[in-house]
Image (cartoon, rainbow, N blue to C red):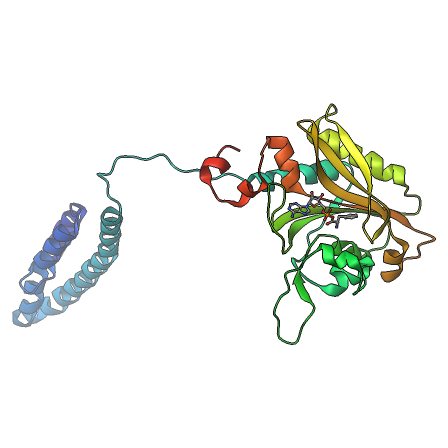
Length: 324
Ligand code: FA5
């Protein structure tokens, strides 16, 4: 009797496909007037020899059916929640697939050009202290060069010297303090300046700093490396211009511009590392020479992709961004 009931109840359970039909099944077998409940209630009136056997078999079956019920119920509920949260009558829409931001792509492209030339890649912090952003770069407190970078200062308890770095050059000293020459490294990252924006200036932008230090590094290494970089990014036909420039942490200093529709766009500042910078990090300036550069990936992306206004990169306009 119990065996037949077991087969029948399990066979019926296989037909259950909704919460309603599960409830019907439960009432049929486990409910107050259910078939198994009826047997359990009648046990007391059975003859002694059958009571024990039927009692334990029907109890085992009850446990089995209750277990099955508990397993199936959450499955049916979760199916229900999928259907209730998705409106399957809505017309299909195309998936929106994201892509890399053009500045991320250009930073990766430039980084891989330098990696091919044997440079390591290191990242630094965007929050800096005056010591690295200015002092170790030979920019003393009262030096007029500090005025070139109107700075965004950070309001920190017990610290008055915290700022958002105005350039990636502080990484020069941080790297030299922790490394022995020879050094050949680039450090990409974000910078911030409190300045008015225009078509070639943003108040936050990226730079890629480069630093090479060794015993026999000369100005021709600097020019050769930067020409090679320009060739790899813009092709060998694009016109490149070097001019003298001043940065307190290099001597001599230059800037490099790229031809832009008959005019020039400056993409980087560079020069031979100033002896005072070497002294500041404990390097012997008579033994070591080096060059450094700091380039702007936004300007390079403008030149590569023919973008007239730098502010478009961070205006978050998908009509612009989805063209890359
Ligand atoms: C510097 O920031 C120096 N630290 C570069 C340097 C490094 C010189 C190592 C010598 C040795 P400058 O302010 O010129 O220099 O900026 C370097 C490049 O960053 C610029 O050529 C430009 O490509 C980019 N850049 C500077 N200011 C902005 C800005 N407001 N918006 C977008 N790009 C900028």
